[in-house]
Amino acid sequence: MRQLMLLFAALLFLTGGIANLSADNLSREGFQTATLTNGIPVYFKANANNKVLALQAFLRGGSALLTPDTAGYEGLALTMLTRGSAKYSFAQLKDLQWRKSSTMTAGAASFDGASFGLVSLPGSFDAVFDAWSDALLHPRWDAAEFDRVVQDAKIALQQDLQDPYGRAVRELNKAKFAGHPYQADFGPSVQSLAGATLDKVKTWWETNLKSGRISVVAVGDFEFGDLQTKLEASLGTLPKLSTPGVSVPKWTPQPQALVIPFPDAGEVGYVRVDFPIPAVGTSDNDALNLGFTVLNDILFDIVRAKYGACYSVWARSYGFLAPYGSLVVYKSDQPGKVRAYLEEAVGLLASGKALASQASASAAGKSGIGGGVEPQKASYVDLAQVLGFYKSKFINGFYEGQQTNGAIAGQMTSALLYRGDVKAYLDLVDRINKVTAADVVRVIKQYVQQGPKTWVALAGPELLQGVTPQTYLGD
Image (cartoon, rainbow, N blue to C red; front, side):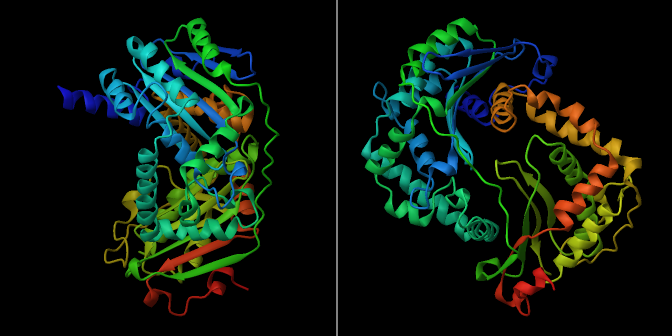
């Protein structure tokens, strides 16, 4: 029985509740808003169809409040919140969450903010809310637990640095964000961990735990009045302290390319190119995200199926306050050639072409690195002919992420931060349906084909023979 309960608790942690995509998830009804006496806003969405309750305290700021010396401190502090409070030892917190099939979640995986969350069943909420709020307001700051938290962070960092793609991304971010607020990563670095002490992390947390940073989002079958009362008696006791507006300038790169020999990569390489993209909340951002859905199929067809140049390839947008996009060629035995392959794929979409909707990019070629199997020739058509298919694909993929109350709370938080309205995520269908083929072609040309880019190529030394920065920067 204990194993089953642990499994259920783990499921709650990973999903934020039981999957249940209903009309309530997508409805604009059921929203309520309140403000605590110290100015903390509370946003609530009722969902009677899902009995799991999701509560999240979001803290704005992220990397803008960090320096290279304190990178990852907010993540360390949030982890310490789960390791004990004034009322509850770490052992008591673990036991309470197991007995109540609930979990506290600490997340600092964004350049723009962090969160401390709670997922609970209704009958357990009162007990675990008391522990959650006590942990947020009165962490125990146990020295032995802090040593373990730092040691875990060092192990995770070392694993990331030994992973070729993880190492490539870290080196890319270090180069492209030099002098930008994002130069202080939300994750810890070798430098910041070397200087991290309990007193430093505690001081950072207490200095930056201000009501003006905090927004609370709740989703589920709550009684909103009762929730307000609980929040007022806990988070509402924080002093009313505003924070200056966080200014995050646009990332504007100078053309640069990093070529990094990495023996542990062996006989494969990793190539990634990053570039600025339109701000979240703009129609161009919507058009680019839809365009990336189209581009991913083309990339697979050209880079993997046609040339057998990689294990996988993809386009992705990162919707931060300083947003950027990337094209990634993952596990390639031709790192010196992939720029031409990427340009061919992007050029097809920029010319208004797309894979026929009945074609399956994943079935177009299974040869992978090095070829070996004659790929099936893909069929290309005018983008306008298949744009409806890709709109449906994009919208379905987006709303598959709304199946739990925890996921909805995350979408509300993101919509609040980047669009100023917790309901804005529900406008996605209308926004995407307004995008035309001409819009997609225009933004692909402007943001992916043109403009300065930052490249990284990391591979085994033999694969990089003859590869220089100019391989990627061109003339």
